[in-house]
Length: 198
Image (cartoon, rainbow, N blue to C red; front, top):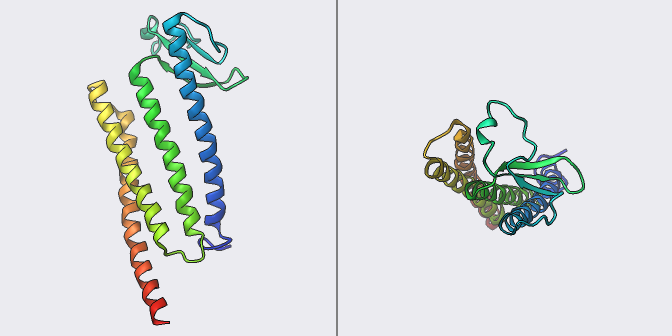
């Protein structure tokens, strides 16, 4: 099986990434509904959809040395619809909402631009302007996300935590993709020259 071009591995990878993109869009929309319903319930002392979206000082966290300091803090827990399986949990505040929303938007964008990149690579002419465009967007998305997460982490938490070091992986990945874009530009130029010569 070919790696790139029509009926290639890249075409099947693009289908798989598109399915992941659809799942993440659904998850992100569900989480946003959860945040807004939870905020409404918190503000109005209501219990709308409280079997899906739980807020309170006790949302079922295990009590141990890590969680005991959060005993009196407002927390949330969102379940996967119609199950008791935890989807997401955390401290119920604006910082958590911003972090999770930025992360979800990035993942949706990541898989969409990844899908478009692989889809274009699986076309008849691998070196085309659409491949270059989508790979460039993919690279810049990773770079912008990395910078944004570092900014949020430094100014929101007033510390630079080791958990945020993963953003350097995305920064490196974004820069690496931009280098690959340059190779695709060279390939496109050579392909255009060949087409003109023929």
